[in-house]
Amino acid sequence: MRKIIFIATFFLTANFSCFAQWGARENVKGTVYKTNGEILETTLVYHRIKNDIDYILIKDGEETKRIKKKDIDKITVGNDLYVSKPVFNSSGKRILKDKKLVKQLVSGRMNLYVNSYDIIEVNEFHKMATTNYKRKVYYGQKEGEEAMTMIFYDYENFDRNREFREALSAYFSDHEVILEKIDKGEFTYKNVVAVAEEYNK
Image 1 (tube, helix red, strand yellow):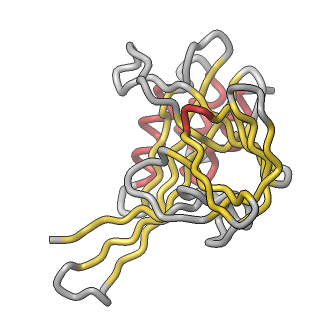
Image 2: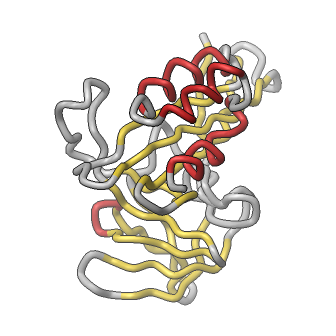
C-alpha cells in the first residue's frame, strides 16, 4: 500500500509555497490580504499538506501562526498574485462550498488560474523508495461566470495531450481559432497560458 503526500509548494519557483504554489521549498516574504480588511506584511512558512490547502502558516515575530483559507482574500509574493476563488463542481451546475487558493496566470475577459503541486508517493514497505510527480490543475473563469471551472488537470502520469485536447476544446468551444489550433496540434498541453491569451485578444 502506498501513501500519497502532497508537498506544499505554494512557493512557485521561489515564490509562494504552502501547498505547492511558490515553488521553492523554503519560507518566503509575502503580503496576506484578509477578508476582514487586515493586511499582513509577513513571512510565509513552507509546510507539507495532504490533498488541498486549508490554511497557511506565517511568522509573527518568533511565533508561527495559522491563517485559515476562508479568511484569506489574496496573497502577493513578489509580482505573483494568489487569490481565493469559488469553483464549480465537476458538472458545472453547483458552486462548491470551499474556495480554492490559486495563482492567477492570465487576466482579461477570461482569467486563468493554476494550482501546482509536488507529489511524493512513499512505498510503505520501503520507506526510502519514493516516486515524485508534478501536478498542475488549471482553472478558467470567463466574464459573467460566477465561479472558476477546472479546465485541465496536468499530471505527469496521464496522456496529457489527449486530456488537453478534450478538456480545452470543450471549455473554449466558443472560439473557432483556438479549436482549429488545438485540432492542428499548434496548441498542446504545454500551451495552456497561450490558449488563454489567444482567447483574450
